[in-house]
Image (cartoon, rainbow, N blue to C red; front, side, top):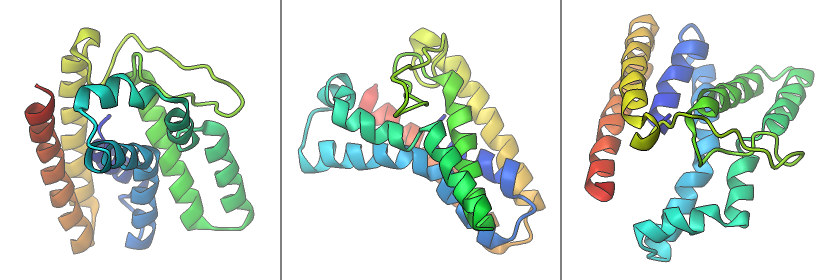
Length: 190
C-alpha cells in the first residue's frame, strides 16, 4: 500500500477512539516502515541525481539499502519493541509498535518481487505474492482500486469518529497528499 493509505487505515483501525496523543504515535508507527524508502529516494534522486530507472532497477536492490529497509519492516524487531513498550507500561510505545505491525501485515500480501525480508535479521526469506500494489503485470491496477476504496472508507471512519479538529484536518491533508502522490507517480513513471 502507499504510505498515505497506511496512515489512514492504521488510524481507522487503531486510533479512531484514542486521544490525539496516541493518534500521533499510531501515525508515526504507520509511517516508520516506509521512512527509509523516503530517505533512500531523497539521497538517490536529489543528492546523487541518479536517474529514475537506475534507482529502481539497481540501487534499490543493493544489500546495504535492503538491510536498512528491512530493519524497519522486521517482525522480530517490531515484536521486541512491543514487548519493551509493554514491559515499561508505555501505551504510546505500544500503539507505535502495533501500528508498525499493522503496516507490515498490510504490505505483506501486496509485494510481488519487491517485498521485504519480514523476518530479518533471522532469515533472508521474502514472500513473493502473486499480486502487487503497484505493478500492473501483477494485478496492480485492481489492487490500486481496492486501496482507493479502503482509503476512502478509512478517511470517512476517522473523520466521523474523531472529536479532534486537528485529526479531521489531518485526514484532509493526507487525502490531498494521497491524490498528489498519484499525480506525481503518473508524471514521473508513466
